[in-house]
Amino acid sequence: MATEILTLDELLTRLPRFARLIGLDLGTKTIGVAVSDVERRIASPVETIRREKFTADVQKLSTITKAQEAFALVIGLPLNMDGTEGPRAQATRSFVRNLDAHLKLPVIYWDERLSTAAVTRTLIEQDASRAKRAEVVDRMAAAYILQGALDRIQRIKQDTNEIFKELP
Image (cartoon, rainbow, N blue to C red):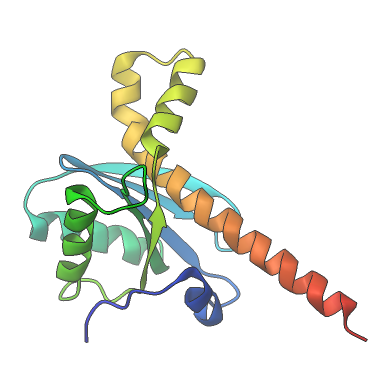
């Protein structure tokens, strides 16, 4: 069975009431990792994995997903500014295809355009040193990506609740 790629709507139909999601920002040198709370309201940065070989990277991810009892992965998809997919998006999709033998978690892709830039800007505004920014930017970008998905989940839930309130 191949890694299951879901839309956010498809994921919502399967989510248990309490379950964590893991957010990933896949870079060429690092993988930023973030985790949600069980109610899926807040994304928190967890760690930055220094990329080595695929198997070692996935083993670290597997350890994190098991420890956090993750239900699914939200993986940042680095689209071009015009919405097309370039080499980085293709590399991300390839990484996910290769996950199949190692992690049996559903995956959703989340548009990550400008996530690192937004996080870097926030860190600069907080007067974080260049060294500190380099240390935390990847896991904070993962949290930014995951928070975007969590916010969308909350909006869908609110919209659904409002629809049901209007029914007789």
